[in-house]
Length: 313
Ligand code: TA6
Image (cartoon, rainbow, N blue to C red; front, side):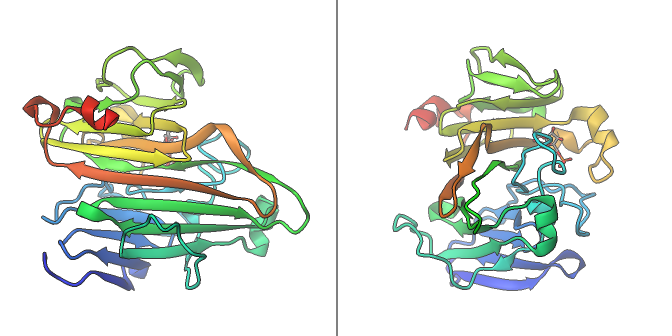
């Protein structure tokens, strides 16, 4: 409710899993589960949910939650010999009570800091010591900000490399009414064609069938326009050169036990990522990957918002 005091509350979510609820003074909110460091809700100041979470999502560790913003680390998809999308989304994170100072440009007052560190068992899977700090914040106007800081803390002098994605599931009215702007004419790897490399055509991307593409070296801003809802999501990213666009469509939807047969019509994943060139950190080095999501209440056809202006602005 607008005019309430901003708050950060640790409470119990589905199946008693710990979650943190952020609320800002204008009524916007976000929820993040300690399991997976997983954002599962982002609402406007009118309480409208902006992220998609499947009605069949399973909140039972170690199974990753279907929807929201899973974090893919230290491996995106099957680009390596670890499990699909790495293990960060299947682990329990902790509240970071003593985070290192945050860059001064962070204006948000409503945030939570989480941390993930490897256990002895984890070394058997990925023999590296790291500290993964994640800040989830509500920014001005109810924007959602995720900042990851990953530090190599190996004592044996060894560097490590990883790939990464914020695997964001956006809630959309009707997938066939959605356009994505900002990826035109870019090269991409098509996961539906053995990752063969193609070049995207010149127009905005629309959806008539399943898509699973990794766009390479994209602009830092991408617009997702939902005509029916007269709303545009603006995705801004930093330290994440690539972007994945995914919709399973009908057949794959039926094959996923934690996803409803028709739910593909109401979601689209647009994922800020670092895939083509893995990130390598020497001991003591730190990488930062930032995602900023805004929901602008107007649509392309209303002429009020021309995504090209947004993307150039
Ligand atoms: O990001 C797209 C993708 O890699 C697709 O290939 C599809 O597998 C999707 O992620 C979901 O992966 P998940 O492991 O969550 O079922």
